[in-house]
Length: 276
Image (tube, rainbow, N blue to C red; front, side, top):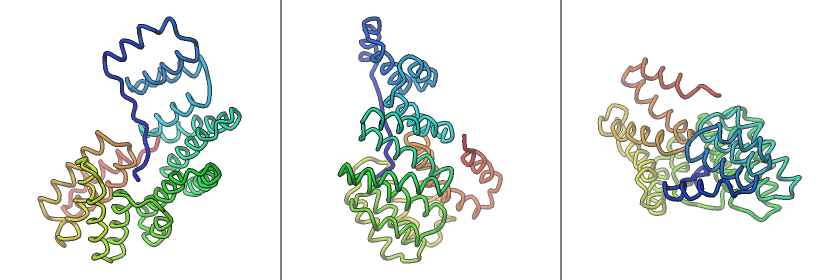
């Protein structure tokens, strides 16, 4: 139950076919094409052009979600909030739910009370729409937030409300048990996670580094653990939204502090603590 993100890719041939039809598109079609191009090219100007051409809930949502995925959380708030309001006006309740969920996710990096209120509204709407998956994701991400804050008991309270138990759930459960000193339960959670996580290297590696910590008390000075953790951290920066990176930052800082590499730790804090 990973943090959801939108992954839009067009290969070169498909992109060329779309471009060939640009002159024949209606305004709303061209605006959507601009948003998809913005995601593909990673160019914010495409989203801005689309907003001017044909502002609607879907395009505001795409723009806000893209900003949040890039780590521009403050800038994403207005777009996602507007997407939510427009979606309600347009009677697109499922889109309103997506916008509210992404708004809550942006607040996990900004302000706790607004995060909790946004997730509360998200859960209420998800229940009305019988979309239990969003309820589970809300509780999962609240738990992840409290885990990052070092509040393991509070994290556990919310994680236990998740009905869906997948590899990502067991990853967070293992990390919570580790924080609480319940190491055997943590090891069991890692094993369950590895059985259900799938074959994607980066997903399995998130569990593997937890397992290594649990089975090697001197992991902070273990070269193999440090190598695995830093490789995972590097790949997360390339392949996943910023939230994954922020979650694992605490473990990288822990190793750097143990090695007395304070300048490197400071540089990472400076790099990832800036909220835009």
